[in-house]
Length: 107
Image 1 (tube, rainbow, N blue to C red):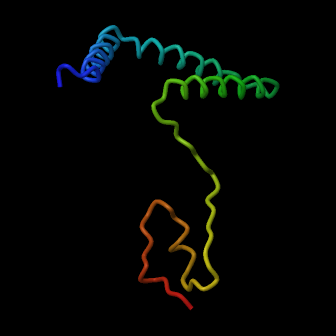
Image 2 (image 1 turned 180 degrees about the horizontal axis):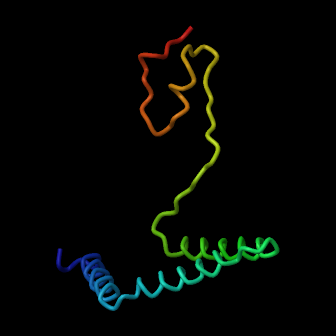
Image 3 (image 1 turned 180 degrees about the vertical axis):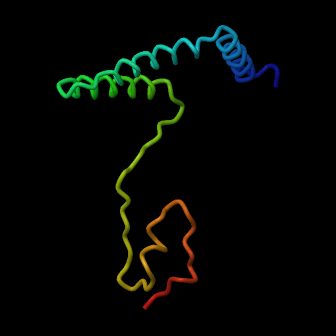
C-alpha cells in the first residue's frame, strides 16, 4: 500500500487541504463572494434589476465552479399517474415523504 501512487496522491491531497484550512483560504474566497452578494443586495432601484440579476448569476456561477455538488431546485412538481390508480392525489404529490401504499389501489 505504501508503494502505490494513489496512496501518496491521497496523502498529498490531505496535506494540501490541511494547509489551505490553516491559511484560511476558504474564508478569503467566501468573503469575496459575500461582498459581491452584499453589493447585489443593495441594488434596489427598479432600473437596477437587470444588473442585480446579472450579478446574482455570476455569483451563482462562481459558487458552482467551487462546489463539489450542485443543487438543482425545481419550483414545479410534476405528477404522472395511470388512470387505473385509485386514491387521492395528496398521497402522491409530496416527493419528500413516503407514499402510503395502503391508501392506493388499482382499478
